[in-house]
Image (cartoon, rainbow, N blue to C red):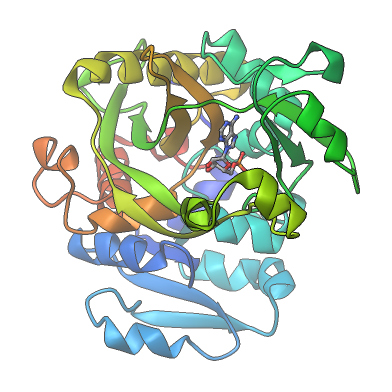
Length: 355
Ligand code: AMP
């Protein structure tokens, strides 16, 4: 038995009933609802204003019911209605971003996964401490620009989608950088990007074992990022700079990828150590997470980010992926979440996967 994440009082609203899977109508909600419905759960779409019309186009993923609020900030006010509905909230990136970490953390509704992970993910320094103390290699950070060797990427704190990132091929090129806020200078890792979709279950028997529970790989993608992905067509960076064109890394879509099979052991090893460390630091990162990094030509995986909940790249695999099909046919991350709820209910271990 692992440590309980949720108190009995928080889970009281789920007693002796089939829970309802709820999430905000955005990001990966179609997949979450589809997965829950496939596993036999009722679904509830949280929306701002009228239910989104595009859901009508996807009848197998449309939630059974909607709970509408005037603005996202009114969601905490719907706590009682959510508890009455026996809701389990499945958080995704947009949910936490729109609502804000504090409002999200304080909602007294059962949430899938460990909400304490937010404090570690949203603070870049704490995130680095966690990942590096787990033995992951991260891009080097330069405190002093005079120490720079090779290309760098300058990131503003809290910058979303890479807007405002500055690329410099070397120390000299950084002279052109005119900061407009607090930033960090990071080694620009040259290689190929992989966004690996893992799922950690503290309650599953068998599989790829960790000290407690099992680790699964459910898919992998690469993000399409505008304008950087197509910028090379216009010529050299220096010329673009002079023309006032700046690179941005705004995610516009995702493409499926797989990793050389010989690199899979390394990927599992790093992900496993990150999970083990999360258990020591804050009780564990339960459920889906995404390890985001760059494989260099020396086959070293440098992690630049971790997303500690379902990522939108998993939407590629609503009917399964080359990896998840080897766990269970047609298994999406959304469906895996619903299965975890089923297993936890059957074994009386909901408090280990909900917070
Ligand atoms: P982030 O906001 O940290 O998730 O980064 C957004 C995008 O910038 C990533 O998806 C990568 O394409 C790129 N990127 C971030 N950090 C690095 C790095 N250290 N080296 C190369 N590319 C990076």
